[in-house]
Structure formats: C-alpha cells, structure tokens
Image (tube, rainbow, N blue to C red; front, side, top):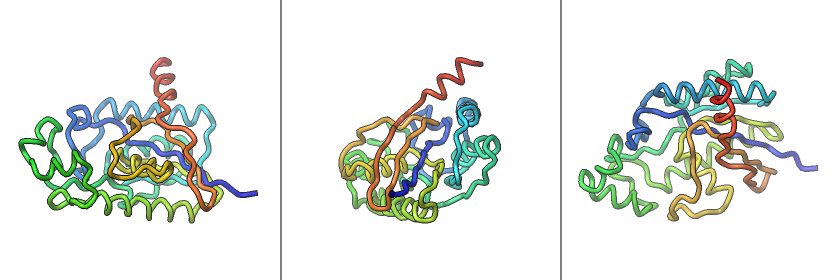
Length: 212
C-alpha cells in the first residue's frame, strides 16, 4: 500500500500591511494584534483536536515564524526555518498599496496584475522563478518526510503556488481560491502525484473565537 505524505499548509497571521492591502513580499513585517490572536487560536485548536505532526517548517520571515511559535510550543515541535519558503520578492512593488500600484510603478504593476510569468517586477522574482523555488522546497520536504505528516507555515503567494502544483492550474491564470490568514489547507503526495484534500478551512478560528 502506498504511503501518503500529508501536508497542512498555513498562511501566517494578519499583519498591518495585510489590513492595509499593501504588498509585503520579503519585507519583514510583524504580526498585528489580530495576527497574534490568530496564531494563538491556531495552536489551541490543533492541540485540542489532538493533531499530530512529524515536522514543522516555517518561512524565516518573522510573520510566519511568529505564527509557528505557539504551535511548536503547544505540540512539542521544533521549527525548521527555511528561506525557500519566503514570499515572492515583489521588486519595485514591495511596500506598495494595491490602489497605489498603477500610478506609482506602472510597468511593474502591469506585469504583476497581468501575471506575466517572466517579468521580475524590476528587481524581484518572476513568477517562474518563484514557483520553481517553492516547488523545489516542497518536493525536498516531501522526500525527507515520506509517509509522515508535515505542518508548513508560509505566505499567501507560496500557498497559491502549492495549490497550482496540486491542481495543475497554470501560473498565468488569476488565483481561483481564497487564502485566508491562519486557515488550514491540506494536501497529500503519494510519491508521484499531489492531491488536494481540503482548502481554506477556518473553522478552528471561528470555534476558538466563540469560546473566548
């Protein structure tokens, strides 16, 4: 019988720049108070459910690391920090609010908005470069933890790429699914193919907030 390697992917908790609809990229923005609460609720819910993981990986940017810390404490796990799990580098668009983009950086914004897979956004990463970085990291983790269950805390862009890998959606198409902060997203790998199991599950956040 084929052993499945299961992944639970989590986007970091909310930051001030998320709330302002500002592109963060690899700028190291901390969690805001809502993001801190989301991280705590995530940890409490996973502990209450008795969810077990064999490994915990996180982007080394503080908003992801800080989201992972309460989970690591609650479940007795060490955190492996990986720079390959960072958000895409948005080049000239880092720090730009979405409503500012078309006028502040028109060339880079057009490439971003149109999902030009080759354009590096004037000093950042192209979609192709970013997706290859994420794919390589994901496949390496899957190989290192064959048959195990892994929790991975990262960023919206990273999770979007993983969704596309699992579902075969091309990079140039607009995003099909929501990627909420601190939601649970499950997929598995049988050694050859990826399978999406569940996406954008926020029930643990709602339940935790209701209990407070």
